[in-house]
Length: 532
Image 1 (spheres, rainbow, N blue to C red):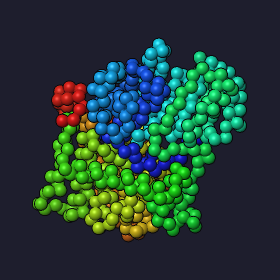
Image 2: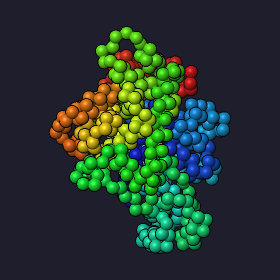
Image 3: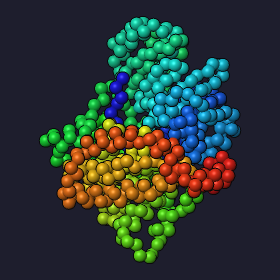
Image 4: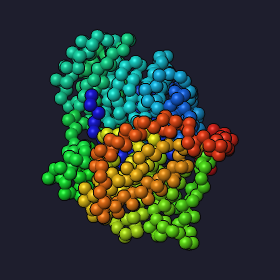
């Protein structure tokens, strides 16, 4: 099955979430929700295993993977306030979830191997991958290869039949007789066959009965989507590169936000008013994160105390002037809200959640622009993010912080050009300049927490975006076109050593001070991640 095109509100501007990390916390929630659905909530024992060389082995506790997964298994969503007390709630409900570091052949730095032990006495094994920005894949279930991303209603039929020719025959009949399904995939392990039907709406009881008569399946599992924007049959988008936009007479002169409306409308099957409304809601959450951070936040498992309010109230001389002060203040406020398990929007990730919205909102406020203009900037940024997602990754575990704060800087630069009334070409030029400036940025969090140097890198993303936007608006030549810059960015990121890709094994992560802070945090919290 060909993976569906990226969505602005699945892959780039979202999820709306709590927690320090989208690839660790939010993705874990979604993984937990899928596993919970598999057993209809009737499983009380799980073992979660992380491979020692991957990113999760050293960060699953400090970056909220355990909270997210337990919360998802309890049926919570990514923004649920109950995530803060998920462990306690699980104990009260008799849910046993053990986390282990186990040596196995992992397929990705963010691999989850989850073994479940429901009341039927059988053991079930799931292989999930968190691919960045809260996006996930279920790649294997009890030895059967799968392709589940959380964007369809999934019907999984388990059969005793394992003969490929017979399974293919079932698939052909299902495709021919059930025109409303999007995809029908088959796979067989040594012990069972799997038919996976993907649809945009749940299958009716009559359809399921018909499938029973046809295949004689011995078990059926029904999964609801966990992503906000659903996929569908024959999903097509109008463009997927900057070159396609700029070389087309019908699109090259349109503002970038209008192109974003076109894209997401086609991708999600929405009208443009719905896309604008969703963007408005996302911006409101971002604005709320600024306000919460400025009001001051507290949380036990945290390195930095409140700093945004200190800068906002500072009356001494600052070199950068009012605009820079506002940008840094807003970015810091959002990062503090994130670190206190407040609600933020991953944009495109939680680790990079402040660079784009902090800069966008600060510039809009400084220029006296309304929220509607800011939403246009957000959508412009979302389209740039989609074009990056189509060819690269937002996972620092795969490409370092350039995939997170680097991408957010390119997105923010395009958003600022949109605020200034610039053209799509200028926006892509600004994004290219910003990405070129930040290429090679490593991910080396202090004490394995998404605070230091993450705050500074989010500020760097904002400042870089300001410069890149002004350069593009003034007519500077980026030299390397946006699409080529994205390709280079992806290549460079994957060349970075694993030690510099959010594993906590090099850079600032292993300095004496970082190690001392990590030990201090362990003693302070004694494993607790509950609010102060």
